[in-house]
Length: 557
Image 1 (cartoon, one colour):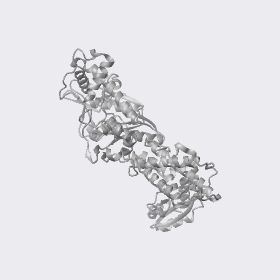
Image 2 (tube, one colour):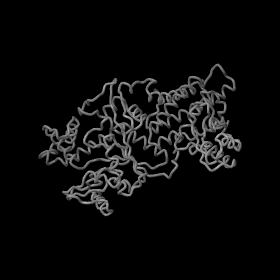
Image 3 (spheres, rainbow, N blue to C red):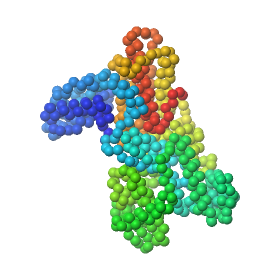
Image 4 (cartoon, rainbow, N blue to C red):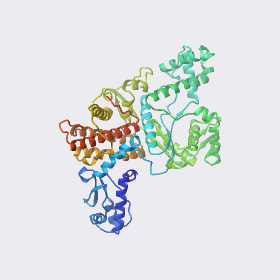
């Protein structure tokens, strides 16, 4: 679990001092864990170590807590230590701590809040979206794009080497059927229920005619299905890449099933390897993988009786390929893939991939609404709502943020009429407006000729108003918010932090004037400069938070 003391040098010093004090008091060995109190009046941090030591020490928790405090040295970072309740030790941080915090934020700039994870840095493969290249991305794919991209960014901020990867299912019968559908559309012939429908098929047919000439569909749909399917996949993949790029989502690797697994013999190789490991058997001419031995509900066919490998065999080969170039595999799958989790975990076991290094997350669906009424019809496909249509209407920031502020296990109701409202009730607008407000404030100070001096000259210890202290305390939470969001793959934790920080700044802005033309005293100037740099630090933290969510931080709105 993420610990605040690991992420903040001052908190680490406090935890070390508490540990030494417990030892000096003759208490048994125990880890010191700092936690945020539920009530602000209880201080900035607290530890329940005295309660955990009560049983081994055979003493009352409050007595233990008082013994620890009796042996605590004076620390510049601590204003007050007190015992509360059953034996909690509450910690109130000093003005010196908060002054050094602002200095640290301003010095670290864009890197503040990012900290290496507790373990060794890993090569993490993050696979997400991976929709079939036989049609446009639907709006639900936008959720996986936003979430996968933000999780990859959080893992990078935690010190890992991350590869964003899109698995292109460009092999098998679906691609032949895709090619046949395009060829029929290109020749002006009717498509049946077995073919792909929608205006996009005709659009691709027109592109192929313009690029390769009308003979691309000759002599017949069936004869050219495979060739046209490959050309159609290339065009559709580019369209998918273009839509995702509009969201700011790019992939380090587009992995082709056909070219990198089937054409290279990787699928046959993995079947041979699994057989050599004793993980397969033959029944009625088909080769089965013993996935039921590793938690799957039944064994899975990896080679049909006619000798053709199954789609699942390609999954095995793909996992093996990824593991050979990674230390940790992260799959982000849609709600319709629940049944895949057990079988993928079983494949990992067969491939001797440690269970802790294969991670599969399932996300729930997206309900698209307008004024509370479901939106079901696409202008182009007639069935699903295409992602590019929604992006055109609401923009990337709105789409991404509203997906990221809810957990993967929550179904998202995405109301087009609500999310586009530019009001303080709209979460993304609320956060972005806080950043723009600070930028406007700093511009106004410059235009009025205000001289803020340098952060090194600022006297931050004068920031003792409740609204100032609340903002300082909020800024201090970013490293832990980032670490927890990365650890739990929970983008909503970082979005929640952004909204709480924005609210805290808005209250600071309302209660604390940076520039006061009515007071020209030296004390007023000292406070104005400290508030100026505090606002500057708040802008840095808001920008860093939005950047990790891959949402823009506008200077003007």
